[in-house]
Image (spheres, rainbow, N blue to C red):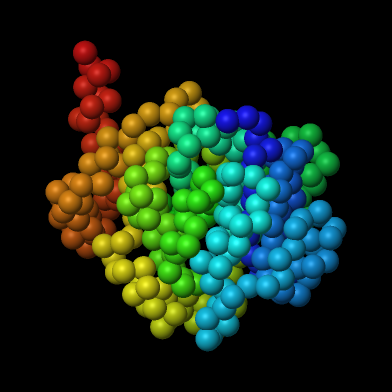
Amino acid sequence: MGPIDMLTFFTTAKPFSGHNRVIQRNALRSWKLVHPDLEVILFGDEDGAAEVSLELGLRHEAHVERNEFGNKRLDYMFDRAQEISRHPVLCYVNCDILLLDDFVPAIRRVMAAKRKFLMVGCRWDVDITENLDFSSVGWASEVARRAKAANQQRDVWWIDYFAFSRGLYYKKIPPLVIGRIYWDNWLVWRAKKDGSMVVNASEAICAVHQNHDYGYHPQGKSGVWTDEISRRNLELAGGFSCLRTIENANYRLTSTSLKWDWMGLLLATKLGRAFWNLAVRDTLWLRSRLGLRKEVLRRVANRFGPKAEREQR
């Protein structure tokens, strides 16, 4: 499909002040450095957005459609980005995520495999309170080292980047809002519904989330997850039946291969989801008591799944 300069990042940010200024500038600068010819679009008129855009050479789109509570609408940003992007592949990234030098090779391989795709992956959480020294040759490897040392990888429900082919979501997103939950899981569901190749790149990409508080909500993190706006996001998404996770990807990208993920294919069927709900979701309370988690179940499934069978032959 040609060179990687066919990629546009887009995002929106909180006001550029205090700790948010540090981590958001870190994130934006890291994206600019993954390749010398990438487009980055920053949506929103928050304090400092125009100045940072000018400083870092970003395209600044100050206007964003909002709901009646002032929350930024996902559908507007995705549609507008697809309209104005210079490139046929876009990537929405949360503005606290550092992307490293493994991102470009990963997306090149996905772009070469199929025209219509969505690439997502799990993130690594780490505490970063300082402006990173991007002039250092080894800045990316140092960030990856810190993230792996912290050893806090989020599970498949937490999705912070969405690389996709232009047109995949155009005029298809309900008025979901950023800053609450469920919109990310809806995006995975929609891509699968449209028959796109959905790729889990967690093993190939070290996406690093810079930890922060939830001071923008009066009730903190619990409010972000449970307030009226989150409940409305769930309703607009179509309910829990229209939510999917990284686990539902039908392809898995590793450092050496892009292959079908039999677990994701199973979960794409009604029977597979019913089995998963019975075996995993509906037994969460019991597994929590016993100290079991989904990763344990995945290891058991992989032990007896098709891959294990091939290895034992």
